[in-house]
Image 1 (tube, rainbow over the protein chains, first blue to last red):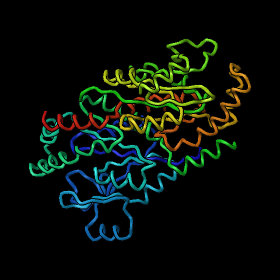
Image 2: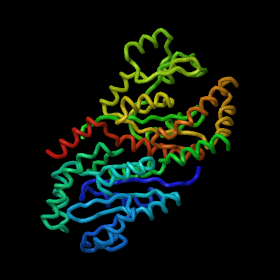
Image 3: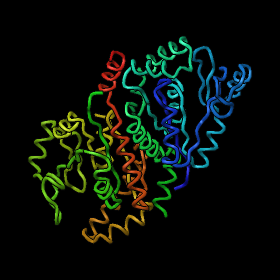
Image 4: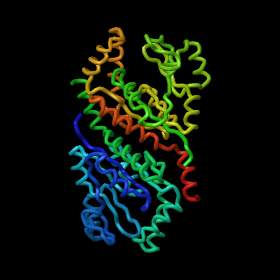
Length: 205
Length: 205
C-alpha cells in the first residue's frame, strides 16, 4: 500500500497531561510529526519559538487567516491559536503520523475537513478537583490563568463524546500504555483516496 | 469511571488471518468476550458447537429472528449467520471488551445500532492473489467453497472505507502488533451514556 499519513488529535484540559504523554510515548510509536500551533499570545517562561509554538503578532495571524493558511484557528482567552496547513500536508505526503494537540473547537473543524484521516483522543484527569490540584501545584500560572483554565475545562469536558477515545490520566503508566495503543491504531487509519487506491491494487496485483 | 464495556469488530475475507490474530493477541489485550456466531450451516471437520459456532437448525434460527434475539444476521452461501444479543449485553455490563468476527453487512448493522461503542478493523491479505494462494494451501475447503470465498472477498473489499482501521496482514508479527494496539484502543471507547455519567462524576467528585 502506498504510504500516506494519518492524523492523531489529542485534546483535553491544560494540566491533564497531554504533553507528558506525547513526550513519554516518544519512540514507542515510531516516527511522527508533531504539529506546532501558531499563537498570538506571549511566550511563557521557558517557551521557545518554533518548539512550543510559532509566536506571531496579530497582524501576521490575521493575514494568514485571509490566505487560507490555517486548518483551524480559534480565539481563547483573547488570543489567537491556529494550526498551519502546509507542514501538515507535507508530513502526510511523506507518510507520517501527524499528532495535533488542539482544543475541542479545533477538533470539530479538523474532523469536518479531514475526518477520514483522523483518530482522536480526549485526555483528562479523573476529576475536576484533581485538575485544580495539578494546575495549582505547577505554580507556573497566576491564579487568574488557573481560573481561566478551569472554566475552559468545564466547557471542554462536554465534548468528550465527539472523540474516538477517552483516556483518564490517573495512573501515568497505564495512561501511557493506552496512549501508545491509540497512536499505533491511528497509524492504521486510511483516507478515502488511499482506500480506493488500495482496493484497486489489491484486486490487480 | 464506571466500568462498561466496548466493542471491537473484526472483518475481512476468510483466509486473511482474522482468527489467528485474535488467538495470538490473547492475553496481551486483557480479558475479553469473543462473540460466537450462530449459524445454520453444517459444522466443518473439527468444528465444535459452542466454541466455533452455535450450530442450530433453520427453524430455531428463524424463531430467534422473530423474537429480536439477534444484533444482526445475514444469509451467506445459502446459510444463516447471526450474532445473539443476550451474551453481548451481559459482557458489556460486566465491563468487558467484546470482540466480533463478522462480515461487512453485520458491521454496517452493528454500527447503526451500537455505533458509539464500536471500534472496527478490516484485516486483509496484501493482494487478492495472496488470498487465493492461502485459501488453496489450507486444503480444508473444496474448490467450490474457495471460489465462493474469493467472490465474497471481492465484494467485501469494497467496504474497507467503512472501517476505522485497516490491517494488511503481510508480516504476521507486524499485523499482530497493530491488532493488539487496535484492541487496546477499542477498550478506551466510551458509549454516550457512559460519557454523560463520566462528565457528571468528573465535575462533582
